[in-house]
Image (cartoon, rainbow, N blue to C red; front, side, top):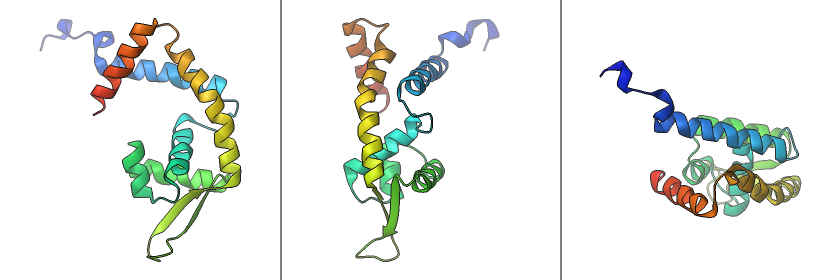
Length: 141
Protein backbone atom coordinates (compact mmCIF):
# COMPACT_ATOMS: atom_id res chain seq x y z
CA UNK A 1 0.00 0.00 0.00
CA UNK A 2 1.25 3.46 -0.85
CA UNK A 3 1.95 5.40 2.32
CA UNK A 4 0.51 8.57 0.74
CA UNK A 5 -2.96 6.99 0.39
CA UNK A 6 -3.24 6.25 4.10
CA UNK A 7 -4.22 9.33 6.09
CA UNK A 8 -4.40 8.62 9.82
CA UNK A 9 -6.95 11.28 10.66
CA UNK A 10 -9.36 9.77 8.12
CA UNK A 11 -9.34 6.28 9.70
CA UNK A 12 -12.30 5.02 11.69
CA UNK A 13 -10.27 3.63 14.61
CA UNK A 14 -8.30 6.82 15.04
CA UNK A 15 -11.44 8.97 14.90
CA UNK A 16 -13.35 6.72 17.31
CA UNK A 17 -10.44 6.87 19.76
CA UNK A 18 -10.26 10.67 19.55
CA UNK A 19 -14.03 10.98 20.01
CA UNK A 20 -13.84 8.60 22.98
CA UNK A 21 -10.99 10.62 24.54
CA UNK A 22 -13.12 13.76 24.18
CA UNK A 23 -16.05 11.99 25.84
CA UNK A 24 -13.84 10.75 28.70
CA UNK A 25 -12.59 14.30 29.33
CA UNK A 26 -16.19 15.57 29.43
CA UNK A 27 -17.12 12.68 31.75
CA UNK A 28 -14.34 13.44 34.24
CA UNK A 29 -15.11 17.18 34.19
CA UNK A 30 -18.80 16.63 34.92
CA UNK A 31 -19.20 13.46 36.97
CA UNK A 32 -18.41 15.22 40.24
CA UNK A 33 -16.20 12.44 41.61
CA UNK A 34 -12.59 12.24 40.43
CA UNK A 35 -12.46 8.66 41.74
CA UNK A 36 -15.28 7.41 39.48
CA UNK A 37 -14.25 6.57 35.93
CA UNK A 38 -16.65 6.03 33.06
CA UNK A 39 -15.87 2.30 33.05
CA UNK A 40 -16.49 2.07 36.81
CA UNK A 41 -19.80 3.87 36.27
CA UNK A 42 -20.69 1.31 33.60
CA UNK A 43 -19.90 -1.56 35.98
CA UNK A 44 -21.89 -0.03 38.87
CA UNK A 45 -24.84 0.65 36.56
CA UNK A 46 -24.76 -2.89 35.17
CA UNK A 47 -24.41 -4.62 38.55
CA UNK A 48 -27.34 -2.57 39.83
CA UNK A 49 -29.37 -3.50 36.75
CA UNK A 50 -28.56 -7.22 36.94
CA UNK A 51 -28.76 -7.54 40.71
CA UNK A 52 -26.49 -10.37 41.88
CA UNK A 53 -24.23 -11.29 38.96
CA UNK A 54 -20.99 -13.05 38.17
CA UNK A 55 -17.91 -11.48 36.61
CA UNK A 56 -18.69 -13.50 33.48
CA UNK A 57 -22.16 -11.92 33.28
CA UNK A 58 -20.54 -8.49 33.74
CA UNK A 59 -18.12 -9.16 30.89
CA UNK A 60 -21.00 -10.21 28.63
CA UNK A 61 -23.19 -7.24 29.57
CA UNK A 62 -20.55 -4.52 29.41
CA UNK A 63 -18.16 -5.72 26.67
CA UNK A 64 -15.29 -5.11 29.10
CA UNK A 65 -12.66 -7.85 29.09
CA UNK A 66 -12.27 -10.26 32.03
CA UNK A 67 -8.93 -8.88 33.30
CA UNK A 68 -10.24 -5.31 33.29
CA UNK A 69 -13.52 -6.29 34.98
CA UNK A 70 -11.59 -8.08 37.73
CA UNK A 71 -9.55 -4.94 38.51
CA UNK A 72 -12.56 -2.65 38.40
CA UNK A 73 -14.58 -4.91 40.69
CA UNK A 74 -11.66 -5.10 43.14
CA UNK A 75 -11.34 -1.28 43.23
CA UNK A 76 -15.09 -0.82 43.69
CA UNK A 77 -15.09 -3.40 46.52
CA UNK A 78 -12.24 -1.52 48.25
CA UNK A 79 -14.33 1.65 48.01
CA UNK A 80 -17.31 -0.30 49.47
CA UNK A 81 -19.44 0.32 46.36
CA UNK A 82 -19.67 -3.38 45.47
CA UNK A 83 -19.65 -6.57 47.52
CA UNK A 84 -18.81 -10.16 46.61
CA UNK A 85 -20.47 -13.18 48.19
CA UNK A 86 -20.81 -16.88 47.56
CA UNK A 87 -23.73 -17.97 45.44
CA UNK A 88 -26.48 -19.40 47.65
CA UNK A 89 -26.96 -22.43 45.40
CA UNK A 90 -23.45 -23.13 44.08
CA UNK A 91 -20.85 -22.27 46.75
CA UNK A 92 -18.06 -22.38 44.12
CA UNK A 93 -19.52 -19.35 42.35
CA UNK A 94 -19.02 -15.76 43.46
CA UNK A 95 -21.75 -13.19 42.97
CA UNK A 96 -21.29 -9.44 42.87
CA UNK A 97 -23.85 -6.96 44.10
CA UNK A 98 -24.06 -3.25 44.74
CA UNK A 99 -23.95 -1.84 48.28
CA UNK A 100 -26.09 0.96 49.65
CA UNK A 101 -23.14 3.34 49.24
CA UNK A 102 -22.80 2.06 45.67
CA UNK A 103 -26.48 2.82 45.01
CA UNK A 104 -26.08 6.35 46.36
CA UNK A 105 -22.94 6.90 44.27
CA UNK A 106 -24.69 5.48 41.20
CA UNK A 107 -27.78 7.64 41.72
CA UNK A 108 -25.65 10.80 41.96
CA UNK A 109 -23.61 9.82 38.88
CA UNK A 110 -26.68 8.81 36.87
CA UNK A 111 -28.16 12.28 37.37
CA UNK A 112 -25.04 13.67 35.68
CA UNK A 113 -24.73 10.95 33.00
CA UNK A 114 -27.39 12.41 30.71
CA UNK A 115 -25.72 15.83 30.93
CA UNK A 116 -22.40 14.19 30.03
CA UNK A 117 -23.93 12.50 26.99
CA UNK A 118 -25.57 15.77 25.95
CA UNK A 119 -22.28 17.67 26.30
CA UNK A 120 -20.48 15.02 24.26
CA UNK A 121 -23.02 15.35 21.45
CA UNK A 122 -23.74 19.09 21.67
CA UNK A 123 -21.55 19.98 18.68
CA UNK A 124 -23.90 17.91 16.50
CA UNK A 125 -27.39 18.90 15.41
CA UNK A 126 -30.29 16.64 16.50
CA UNK A 127 -30.32 14.68 13.22
CA UNK A 128 -26.56 14.11 13.42
CA UNK A 129 -26.90 12.96 17.04
CA UNK A 130 -29.54 10.38 16.09
CA UNK A 131 -27.49 9.25 13.09
CA UNK A 132 -24.32 8.90 15.17
CA UNK A 133 -26.03 6.86 17.88
CA UNK A 134 -27.70 4.66 15.26
CA UNK A 135 -24.40 4.07 13.43
CA UNK A 136 -22.45 3.37 16.64
CA UNK A 137 -25.06 0.79 17.68
CA UNK A 138 -24.84 -0.78 14.23
CA UNK A 139 -21.03 -0.87 14.35
CA UNK A 140 -21.07 -2.45 17.82
CA UNK A 141 -23.39 -5.35 16.90
